[in-house]
Image (cartoon, rainbow, N blue to C red):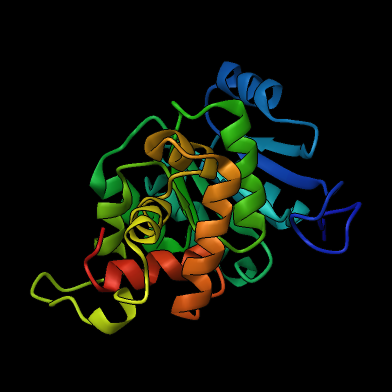
Length: 230
């Protein structure tokens, strides 16, 4: 099974990540390959549901970049691929990459087991960063898609925000950073949105995780979604 190489753990300097790229448009796949940085290695490609399942099962990469609309199979697209590979989800993580930002598409793949969802408007550097983060266990979403995550997590519409005492531990700036990070913004996007440095964002995120006793962005997204803070 392929594993990140060149480092002891995901995210360490020099680590590389094998990826299977699934999309039914050859030119788009070529563009993605050209856009990814040197730490991401595309080791396999597929253009339909059957080919994707075969490639994932054969290569078992740390991350699969997966379009949600694919020909073949029973018409379930990317969600069908994830469902067919449920037994691999402990070691292979799926990141949806789609032109669609429709709620039904987001919810379908997240419920199937995807670790994130980004749109094709994403830049090469941000997509490379998203692959690394998903490989490391984080959940990654394009900005403004986090509202759909509430549905994916099954949060009831009538739920009332709880845990105000936990929220009170955060400063006003930490709350701003927390909400943006939980919505799927990258550190770079948060820095641009709040007119602060990326280093300052990193400091705030560390403080937020420490104060809330959370260990990852994925847990932070779930924490914020459960309290309807997104």
